[in-house]
Image (cartoon, rainbow, N blue to C red):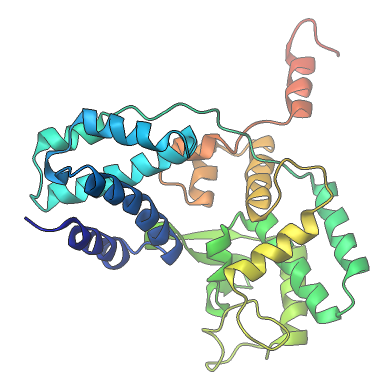
Length: 304
């Protein structure tokens, strides 16, 4: 029987090379599965004979240190692992069913914060006032607006290269989760901010020597990291009385604006790069103002 540490290594290699998952996603899987490995090692449990009672005990063992949301994520990682084990004929369908049918703990999904267009303009004005370096100022405004008008994930923005941008059509080729490609668009203001940024910091127009460079760089011309971009966004969104602020706030705002303009949820799902429609639905709450406006127009007791 293969030792579990070898199984874990093979599985993570499968996620990287066969599924094309990002480094960060693989790190999350590794962290989740390591918790499971510690548990089965401590209690001498054979992973090939995992029972529902074992899963319940594992859940109970972690319940004092993590919440239902975190365990739900760990359970999802284990389900993916056990599907892989089944595909490799290392477990039978009974064991697979034990993990697949174990109920995920319930938790209340919070609705992400949402920014109006006026708030976005306030953020751009804040950058103008607080950033002395004109090149950095234009770059940071371009990053904020590109998140807001394209709905990119942080990882997608970090990996964006010059070749991916079609300035003639204001569109971007995005390499999303699992190596899946999709296209998104940006508006004319974002187009101009990116052009201004490229003219000030990068060699432009594009040439064969720089077309595969990352779009956003620092003052020393080094590619911005995930943490760099995260910091740029969060530092500029602070002070806006939001329950959460960061790149995902801008992504959620992108989706909510589309919904409020009447764009169908399936189209929004495609633009966001969600594999499941249920993932999109958490983003698509309608603003209270929009709901009230609908009631006022449609309900017999509404304001006319």
